[in-house]
Length: 278
Image 1 (tube, rainbow, N blue to C red):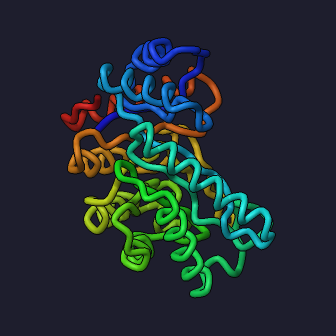
Image 2 (tube, rainbow, N blue to C red; image 1 turned 45 degrees about the vertical axis):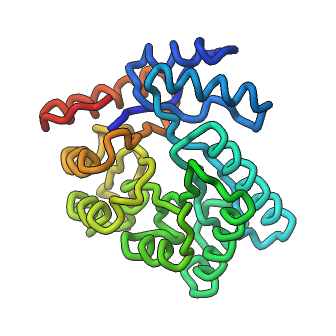
């Protein structure tokens, strides 16, 4: 697998970007361009990544195509199509978004999120994104979430079959599946089940951690890898079964020091398991 994370620093050329990524010891990176520049610039970054043996893991399309506001939903749909086109042109492994929420908060809970109507809308919207772009090198994926589909290995498998598009694949974030004490104390089993059922379709993964507090009722907080209860030994063993360039991307930390600490923890667990991380 390839470890990656956010790059702290400025660059103006592909070579400067590669130097920053490699300086952190990463073998994978987030997309280095935030919008669709001219094709020559995209090709330059793609070539620089290839020459440096760097995997461009994912292009984010963070938005809410299920928004109850029609204009917001349409804007999100257009953004997803644009970002998927960028992912395909730059050779990223995937474009990723969440499925969306039926409420005002784009990534928040809502009582309609788990209805059959919403499931059908996710299928329709995802098909429309892929069919409009028709990617040939990348995939559109949905990040797992605790309060919207896909929220489990089975719901992701169901979506995969219902969407029925060759260029729809899987994004794996096990922390986002941990939504109860029962799952918190069985993250190893949850990870194994996910990879058993969806491994061939996994294109990119996120690295973070989760901590259950003793305050009633249930409080689960995202924390830096190594500070929570996620079974990283199982996580890395299972990812090691996948295609060798599968990215594991550290996210949601604020400082370069935090990213370095997270990377050090992941590499230490990998070393203890006899796993090589690029």
